[in-house]
Length: 124
Image 1 (cartoon, rainbow, N blue to C red):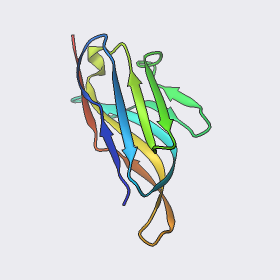
Image 2 (image 1 turned 180 degrees about the horizontal axis):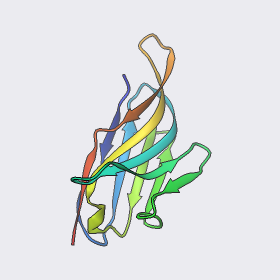
Image 3 (image 1 turned 180 degrees about the vertical axis):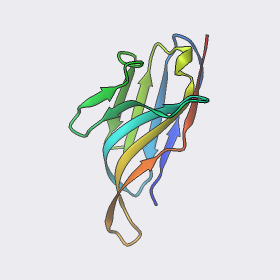
């Protein structure tokens, strides 16, 4: 009943930048905790970045100083700015969020939602 739709992935050369977006559907009331995960071929999904509504953030050591997680509350959209990309950043990236949304009966419900994933490929 609520969706997160990702965009912004693609192919980029090493050293380049990409910005991933993750937009919540129109029936969203607010978004609490947000995160970005990635999964490379043959590897487990890993947490890349995480942010609480109060502003505290976490970054995996492998992306610290290069990636920035952010949100636009007015647009119910979360972002991952990725700079100085490396070939080892190649993966499918997934957004994840705790989303308050309106049900068809106009009540509010909280669910943990995943985006569909977007491919990021960094060439050397």
